[in-house]
Length: 359
Image (cartoon, rainbow, N blue to C red):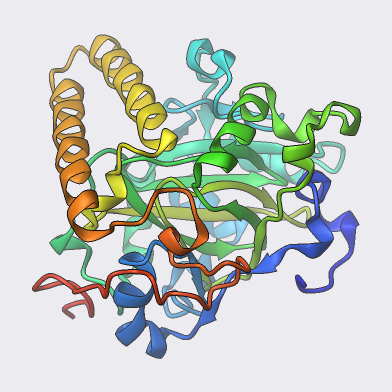
C-alpha cells in the first residue's frame, strides 16, 4: 500500500486506476546505492528511489524565487520543448509535435508562479544549458559515474513549474535519474511488458488524465501502478521503457532535473517488446524533425546509433535472457509485482568503470 496522503495534494495522478493500491517504489540510501544501484536496479531494469541522493547539492538550499530571479531572471526560457504552458502535458499527442514553443524571461515565469489566481504553469523540458549559470549549484551522483555511460538520445533537462503535470509516456535509449531540487513531486510508474504497452498506448495518445472512468477498458482498470513521492534532495531512477507520469505537488515553485545516462544493458532493446518498436519509430520522427528544424545532421546520426543499438540488443536478449518477454520474471520484479523476485534474471555484471563515481 502506498504512503497515506490527502488526495487533494495533486489534481491528476490519483485519478489512475487502483491508485490506493499502488506499490511503493523500493527506497535505498546513498550508501546502499554505492553497492546496489547498478547491479540491483540498472542491470535488472527496476526503478528505485534514493532518498537524500542530492541533498548535498547547493541547489536544494539556494533555489528560492528571489535567488533565481537575481541569478537567471533575465534569461529566456521556453524556447525548446513545449515552452511555457498552463495545462497538463500530453507527451504522445500530435499537438505537442506541431505546437510552437511559448517563451519568456525566467523572471516573467516566476511572476506567473507568484500569481495566486494561477493554478498551474510549467516550463516543460528546458535544456540545462538554457540556464547555464545554475550549473554551479549542481553536483554529481556519488553512486554512478555517468561519464562511463554517455547518453544516446536525451540531454539533461529541467522541469520547472507550479503544479506541473506530465502525462504517461516512456523513454527510449537512455536511463533517467530524476533529481528533485525544490518542492515535492509524485510519480506513478508501470513496467514495460507487452500487455501494459498495448493498454497504455491508446490512452496516452489522448491523455490518460482526462479519460472518463466510463471509457476505461477492463485491462486498463486492472493496472496497478508503482508510486513514489519525491522530497527535495531525493532522486528516482526511471529505467527506459517504464511508463510513468509526474505531478508537482503543493502550490510552490517546483524544480526537477532529469539527468540521463546510456543503458549498459543491451538486451533491454529487446525487439520482441512492442515498446522497442514504438520508441524506435518515435525517435525516428523526432530525429528527422530536429534535423529539419535545426538544420543539423547530428540528429540523424543519433538515430543511426539507436538503430544499431536495437539490432545489437536483439542478439544480446536471446543470448542473455531466454525468458519470453512481458512476464514479471523477465523484468526481475517477481510474479506479485513487488521488487523481491529476481531469481530468474541473469546475474548482472557491471562493466569496468561503472558504479561508484570518481570524485
